[in-house]
Structure formats: structure tokens, C-alpha cells
Image (tube, rainbow, N blue to C red):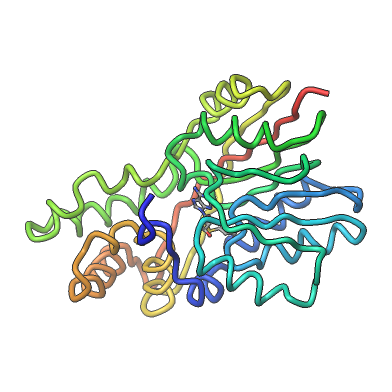
Length: 261
Ligand SMILES: C[S@@+](CC[C@H](N)C(=O)[O-])C[C@H]1O[C@@H](n2cnc3c(N)ncnc32)[C@H](O)[C@@H]1O
């Protein structure tokens, strides 16, 4: 992955990631740690969910991993008050190496950005202590299918079409059956995956535009010349607006797995 493809606008993500924070809380409810464990936050972003995870581990440790330098730097600044309870690692998850095996890997809103789930699950299984858990959520099959109609329509304009050809391959919105097979093949002893609708409605205009530009349209904007980016975001937002609102028809894929004891 090139550095450009890896990087995120951390300042904007920190502002707009209310939906991800909300989803993260529900995934933490599933994790329900005892409080003494070492847990990897795989794709920690700017650390908003990581802070909630650390609060659940008063006698434990968080290893916060992210492939974006801007994200790790922002997370480290945001969580400085937690001291050595949170350890930051700037690494691609596909190359993750830990000093000590972890009791759990937790992850939210990240795995759909990674093309190779077979390799990802192998790497995460290898990072776990015997009996360790994977508790995660990411975009799943059908994610944003409705919004994609607007994105495709805006992207079909002749001066954009060639630049954006194949751009949706940046996402890996997996089906639960396939994810279960891959987790078991990666060495997990038990694995369960299921989909969940998680729609988000944003007021049209600036708020929706910033969210789309920072999160959903990140791969598209990386391919368009700088002077065309704003117009593309406005075009997608206008096409997706209905009655003053933009519906983001998110579908989340939940993953629960356990390493062999
Ligand atoms: C949408 S953010 C989610 C951040 C946080 N978990 C949350 O829920 O707000 C996705 C994060 O995954 C990270 N990421 C994507 N692919 C990655 C990879 N292959 N290795 C490490 N981090 C990756 C990105 O840099 C980004 O910070």
C-alpha cells in the first residue's frame, strides 16, 4: 500500500466519526473484558473507541495499531493521559508483530479496508494467546448499496469515469459465510459472523459532505485531481439528498472468533 493510500485526514475523522463511535460501543459490549487483559485495537483511528476500550481495562493494556501515521499520532495525543496503559504501534495489520500474545483482538470499522481477509485473519490468529478472542465489526455485504447508486452516477461523468474505474475494489464488504470460512481456515477454533443494518442519516450540506469526503469517498478523492475533488463530493451529496437528508445505508459485519485453547 502506498503512503498516500494509507493516510487519513485524522483531524476531520476525529470530528465526523460519531457513527463509528456509536457502533464501537456496541462491539465493546460484546467484548465485555474482565479488566486485566491485553487487547489489541486493530485499526485504532484517532482513538475515540480506543479510549472506551482502555476504560474497560483498568488493570490491563491496550495495544493500539494503525497503518496511518496521522491516525496513530492523533490517537497518541488524544490518549496521552492514559500513560502506559495504551501502547501505540504504527503498522499495517497484515504485518503485525507483537512482543507478547494478546488476550483479544478488537476492531471496528477497519477490516473492510483490507483486501486480503485470509491473510488478515491468519495474522490476527497468530497474535492471540491460546483461547484468545477476536471481536470485531466492519462493513459487510450490501454495505452502502443505496449510496453507491449516487456515487456511481456521479463517477460516470466522462472526465471522471476512467480515473475511478475499479475504485470500489478498495472495499472488501464480505459475506458472513465467507468470513466464517476464512476465520476457521486461519486457525480459529470457533467463528461466527453475521450482518446488521446500521443506517446513518445526516443533514444534507456541509456535514454530509465532510463525512463523505473523509470516510466514504476517500478512495475516490485519492484518484481525482485536487481541483476536482470538492465538486465530486458536492455532486454525490446532491444526488444522495432526499428531503434535506442523506441516508447512508450502512450494513455491518460482526465477527466473533476464538483461538484454540
Ligand atoms: C474508519 S477508521 C476506524 C477507526 C476506529 N476503529 C473507529 O472505529 O473509529 C479505519 C482505520 O483503519 C486503518 N486501517 C485500514 N487498513 C489498515 C491496515 N491494513 N493496517 C492497519 N490499519 C489499517 C485506517 O488507517 C483507519 O485509521
